[in-house]
Image (cartoon, one colour):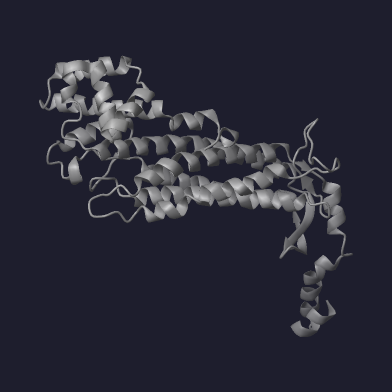
Length: 378
């Protein structure tokens, strides 16, 4: 995750400040539920909310504590106690670290999915507009890169619209699958915490309850989420690759918008390179790179291990931030795409009508010629 390929709203979801604020809210909501159940004093739950809500968590201080205790959640709880005072002893009652970590990750991924869904909606709007604009613009369809039969440029874009509509549907399903809460304590048995605490926290945070957790939320959910992101990235690359081919000098049917003052090459002043769509091809590889590690994270030892943790800390932000940027960039490319209908017609006519050979073939068979003879004559 680097600034060059990042947008602020998505980056903020994964910031330490956001993470620690979510950690606090999970703990505080759990305290509310435990207070209602008589596990801790109601006055303590009120104090925790009031003092914790007003606290400004010091990321550097939490990191310093972690360097000593070698445990991130303990470091946070130690820092939180500095604000809350004596009532801090009621925080994290019966909970385990994964309750906080996994529920937080679910919230972050759900929020990331919401931004990505908005990105896809923006892209669909741009594609739809341009598809109708060129609905009746004839161009040559190609298979194997070779002239095949006529299509319209609008049809090309309509195919992309349908594909990203499917991407959206998959992401909606993946978001629902990932937005689960587990507050079930060590190894997921609820031995030291009432299931009603989990129910309360899930409701407050807009999550579903993990029906059978171990000590962690099962990683098949995460695998499906990142696999979905990978498919979306591949769809981005497919459309980007189409534009790259259409911009080739020998084809020149469409090209990325070249802004005033923009330069294509440090050596060759005439160059107008498809740098945005080439960039999108590269970014798609980064997003897809998260898929295999996510699949490998499914097989954890027994009720838990933490082999998944380091992986998710890296590709959770990287994949969502990169895909967010890529979708916005593709939307801009489509919105400003320069189209050359006259070149489309010129290429369509390049073979002098040979692209209509199938019609001749079919007409000859209708007149009684064998398919073999018709094929030869066509």
